[in-house]
Image (cartoon, rainbow, N blue to C red; front, side, top):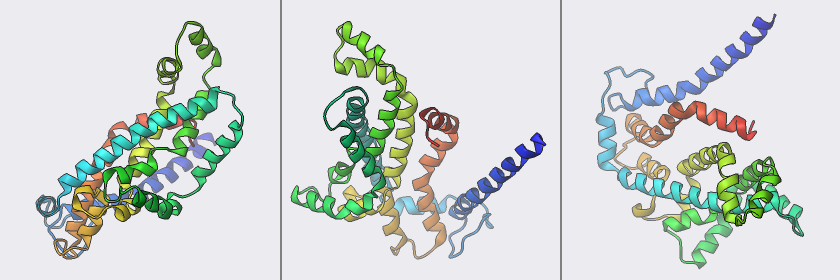
Length: 270
């Protein structure tokens, strides 16, 4: 009976994995097929790199890549700094309005980012930061999810460790660097996965903020390419451009999937 009970979830998992995998295999098969107006699960004319070369030559994806990588790295770095300091204060310090501050941060997790597009754009317009990389990153320098995740992780670290460090003469930054950061690697990996994937795939905000190719991201470049004359509505070209964008994240997932899963489990994310 126990074996049968274990088989059913396994079969269900394989079915769901197959359903998730079909669109990806279809996209890859079309991307490496001869350019056409149809999508094919298996390349009928054999594999070819012509579509990848055509897209790379006609669209400045190299520039888009550099913009996206810069935005992702800088945003995540600043989020780690602001999130760590805020989480440490909420987890270890007692001050008036502590619960109210934490409640406000928690509510921000529930509010979709798209709701804040208009006030954020007006703010950037007043600061003359539209059509800049800083304008794309600025609204995300503080992450409510990151603060919440790190605060919950810091709560599990005994206060006796930081109290002993204070007796030894350590400053607050030294306590964070030597005690809380090494003990929260799983939480940072989990948050990094969420932050990098979100900002890599973010489309609406960069589309609204940017106007020039020098500041566009990969997702905006893909959308413009799909409507351009270079694509000429050929699915092979569109799928090739999509493959160029998703390849780094898919490759990173397959290489580090065990570490990703373990980090989520260790951080208590379900």
